[in-house]
Amino acid sequence: MSARAIPEKISNFLVQRLGRMYCDSCIQERLGLRWRQQVQLVAATLAVTPGYNRSLAECCNCHQPKQVTQAVRSNGAAPTQPAEAMTAAHRVGKARSATANNR
Image (cartoon, rainbow, N blue to C red):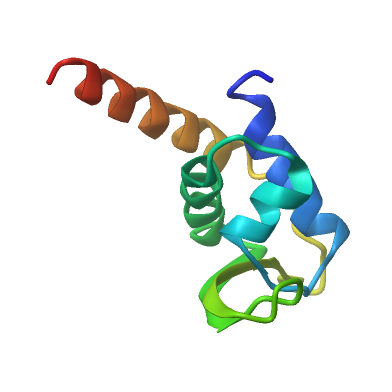
């Protein structure tokens, strides 16, 4: 799966489950992703865009108190695909990889 497809997949997952709070581990499991850290990076990036929230609460899937992310309605409209946030998450992931490779 391409790195660009992961943010879109996570965003779509949350938007399709509007208002439900999922932890990173459950998103990873439900989407069949390899690394939880990918989910964490994308979820944290989405959370600073309109239409998404991230907080400490109970996950609707595993019922554990964790950092959870949810898609919410903003100004009466469902969240849109935040292309800027996805691009930013992709850049941060590449920068982290480059930094790790230089060590």
